[in-house]
Length: 137
Image 1 (cartoon, rainbow, N blue to C red):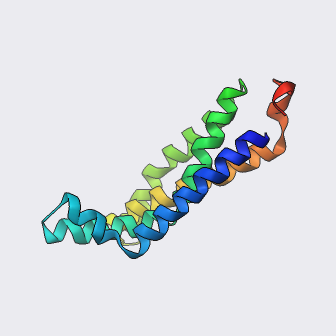
Image 2: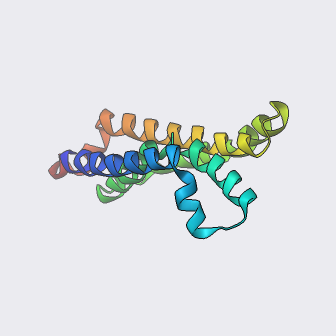
């Protein structure tokens, strides 16, 4: 448990640094890969939106792999599958019903990524997974 949270904290710190960069200077990165101004404009919008979920994504990935290492692969599946599936109707709702266009899809990805990170962290805190491998506490 200690190792999982330590690794999650390190990953979240790196993700936070990237998130700050994506939020305030996305064009610097995009100009390396694209010369078309419209591509850079749309890419910058996307990076600014996902900058909000990078820390949560880092938590989700590290903690999901911690469950796998502990021999409990069910929690990541129960969290990831429904929230990933929810992206489809949520994207449609945000893009069309709310009229946000492509940004609605990006926000749907961001919101579900945040949810996955939060729920994965809450499941780790429950501690039920430790019963499978008490030596990992």
